[in-house]
Length: 269
Image 1 (cartoon, rainbow, N blue to C red):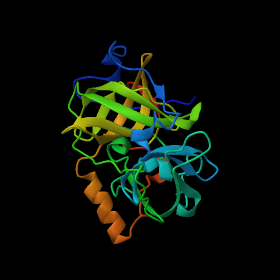
Image 2 (cartoon, one colour):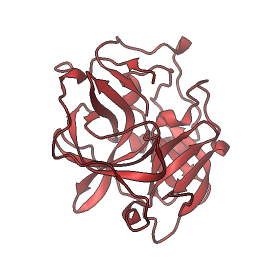
Image 3 (cartoon, rainbow, N blue to C red):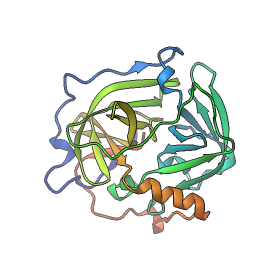
Image 4 (tube, helix red, strand yellow):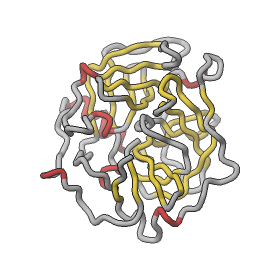
């Protein structure tokens, strides 16, 4: 497993300040049966050609929210062609509720793909994928979105990952350990493949997406996750789709990331 250094997270604290996971946090539960996963059918696996997969979630019948770095080949840094991306809604045990290709995908206009990991990248690590056909099935209901959670708020995550790629898993209860405007440190259990996974919080009696998983981190042996807040980014992404500028993502010369490095380590899940 390759680790990369991260910027010190906030002026007042570093990731190493966070202790072990709280006792009241729930374990991952496999949603491998239809009944267990009934409420989460709009979460799906994003197959990225032959290079791997991420997690995504429907926020409209034809729109999938995920992480921006999922749109890039991690070996070459090249943009993955839309024709090579497939969304499998509710994928479990070799079957999906719906299979869709991609009409267009856009990363946030301020997202920087550099091949190195830093907080500038995490803050804008969001993408929207327009499907080639809407998914209009009664059992696949797109999720609403809401503002980012506060520090200490309880959240949950539904994700696919390595060793659990054939069915999603739910962590019903984890917490926001700290946050800045667009970045959150979460106690949620994520791994490779969980990039783009929706982070949920209860709003007005409904589970709504409030963040997207960008990376997992290791802070002196304590596992944490980094989430990207939605804020006004969704409107920026919708504007990108409308404007037709999906491929114009900034790259830093020589793959060099901006900012000073130090402190904890993290990897993209």
